[in-house]
Every structure is written in C-alpha cells, then in structure tokens.
Length: 254
Ligand code: NAP
Image (tube, rainbow, N blue to C red; front, side, top):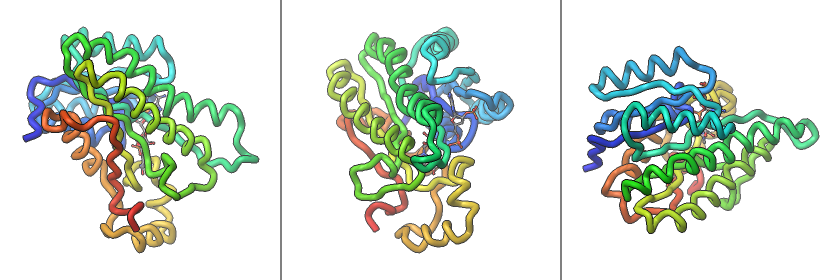
C-alpha cells in the first residue's frame, strides 16, 4: 500500500518544518524528491542528505515560489535531473502577525503572493508535465485558518485569506485537471511544531489552552502531515480529488 517507487516529487519549502517532514515521508515510500528552498540553503542540503540516506535520489532547488521565472527554472531543473515530475506538494508558506491597522500593503502582498500565487505558479509549470504522462498528484497545503469552519484567527487576515484561496484553488483545479489523470487535494494542518508555529508552541499558556481543547492531546508533528501527503500521492487515492483533509488533532471537531 502507498508505494511511491519510481515516482518523482517536488516539495516546495522543504528545507524546514512541514515541507521537510513531507519530503522525508515521500522518500520513505520510495519517491525521489526535489527539495525546494528559498533562503535556507544549508538546511535544504541536510534534507537532501537525509533522503539519500533513505536510498532515494534528491536535489536541492532554490526558488522563490512567488516569482514565475524562478518557478519555471525550478521545475525545469527537476525534470532535467529526474526526467519527469509526478507529485507536486505546494507547501511553501509564510505569515506575520499583524492586526488590520498594522498590516501594510507589503505585508498583504508578501503573504498572498507566497501562499496563494506561489501555488498557482507551481501548478501552472508542473501540470503540463503530468498531463503528458496521464498521471499526476497535486497536494496543496492549506490550514485550519482556511475559513468556512467557524473559527477566526486574530492578526492573520492576510494569512486566512491566502489559505481560503488555497482551498478554492484546489477545488477549481481539481475540476479542470481530473480528466487529465491529475488529482488535486489539500491538507489543512492544525498546530504543527515548526518555526512558523512557535507563537503557539513556545508560549506555555497558549500551548496548554490548545492542548486542553484538542481531543488528541499533543501538538502535531511534520510527519503527521507527511503521512496524509503519502496517501494523497499514492495510486490508492485515485478516487479522491478536490478534497481537503484536516490533520488537526481534532481541533475543528472540538
Ligand atoms: P516554516 O517552518 O516557517 O517553513 C516554511 C518553509 O517555506 C521553509 O522551508 C521556507 O524556506 C519556505 N518558504 C518561505 N517562503 C518561500 C518562498 N517565497 N519560496 C520558497 N519557499 C519559501 O513553516 P511550516 O510550519 O513548516 O509551514 C509549512 C506550510 O504549512 C505553510 O504553507 C503553512 O502555512 C502551513 N501550515 C503550518 C501550520 C503550523 O502549525 N506549522 C499550520 C497550518 C498550516 P526557506 O527557509 O528556505 O526560506
């Protein structure tokens, strides 16, 4: 089950955090993985080494996902190296905490361009390659902050808007690409222990408040998201498209 032997994956923002966890989980199932990074070159090389230690091929590819020329070059380099592209995980993301009165146009553009436009640009570059093979898996990382579930998050309006956009993008692309053999799904993580979530995991009061609410009494780990990505990337998930899987320890159900 969930054998990814022979598959080529590209994971954006895989130098750290959830992206690293996803890259390693895909490699454990037999995929070769291109590790995209933006500024953490050394950490990306460490991820490459870990993937090679698992017996899979890997390269690190620098690109800012919000820039179309860099995204095209990243996808070209992946195909040059591995000959094809089967699985795209759109994971790269950013946030900063700003209330409406603090939030500048630059803050808004940075978050929307990285989290939402970045996913569009990566799909635009990757989908034609998958279409050629009649098989593809696109996995977009959303969030419990994607909206529509009755929970709002203060000082994160731009982030929430970007992640709501990711869900809508996922549904729109799923309808378009299914007939070409490509599935498009989203994973919406809850609180996962990474640099991005330090505001939650390193503030003991906030952390205990969250743990009190979570039915699964722990903070998520990158591998929890990686496990869902493995399933969505597999042949076994061929009847699933346009879906959002909430991997949140039961946060939204509580
Ligand atoms: P993180 O630890 O801050 O890591 C972010 C990753 O994104 C890094 O690898 C970073 O690369 C990359 N990145 C940032 N800007 C980029 C750009 N312009 N181009 C390419 N890569 C870029 O964050 P994380 O917690 O792992 O988050 C990963 C994804 O999960 C994000 O989409 C986030 O919104 C989502 N998410 C996280 C949580 C959570 O609790 N952690 C919850 C819900 C959703 P460099 O270091 O190389 O710059």
